[in-house]
Length: 434
Image (tube, rainbow, N blue to C red; front, side, top):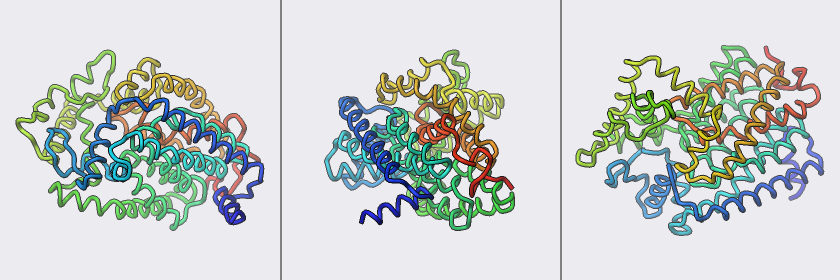
């Protein structure tokens, strides 16, 4: 059994793993689990906030046999595609086992930290070297922004390991038809947890095109997209039957209405920050005149597109404030901490996490610079970052970056320790650009 586990570990790392390295990895995982458990216990009294309230509600309804129902937005129980299905299903599973206890779900999510740490180690080991991988595992184990949402009732707890696994498939080996199929399936599952992770396709098309040429890269990405569509399709069909309209995953893309409106645009303190009920949308949320989800979705999108048509400069402005400033926390610390109360987070832990992030981000950029000869890797990572910035133009904040925090940690460790023998010179199986 032990030799089998060692073989699997060596295969995952794409190279021989020494006994010392295995021990250090296990120590990092154990430390990470201990830190996460302490965090959950220390914050057990925190009340649910933000999207946690909806995940809690949908999860409890699922535990009672009402699959994918919601009370939003009018307080009327109905079938819905308000959120992607997999995280409410996860919460509902634990509620069915342990009762309506959010703390039990948070405890159940602690082991996910071991998966995140291990996958971060695999990503670093394949991209760089054993030394970078070991330090990266330790950083991810202790880095608050890598586990803060993981131990709350947020979909990032599932989305983070899935995102890292997709990045391993995209960035660490030369693309093949089989890897394109695996990538598409992984992203499809990830979208059923968090629809915004569609930005991963940006990294795939850029990295694969640089590795195989544009024709090959586009063909492989098209195969991945088709596979993703097939994975998501059963849920889309369910939505068409229940909602009587086309909703690929969830109606949360209508969130653009909260950013593209006069109130958000002219706010001198929080420009283009998302509003739940801007003046133009208040009437749509009146419980006296409830609308179907499809109708509400259509009208909210109409409000956003109408404002953009009248004010086209609002798009680059929102991209700056949301896609850059808020997503990557290139802003005053007080503005970042303003989000804490509305998301049910610890202000102290968030502050410590942002202190560490302020160090990791520039080191990650140095890591990319040191690996600059490996254009498929560097431009693939930059494409993922740009894709995320574009996706989160409509609504953003520290939380939305959570699945990318382990990647930032891995690149930062490479920035400090070096990319490994030959890697900075562009050597390795996936290093040269064609």
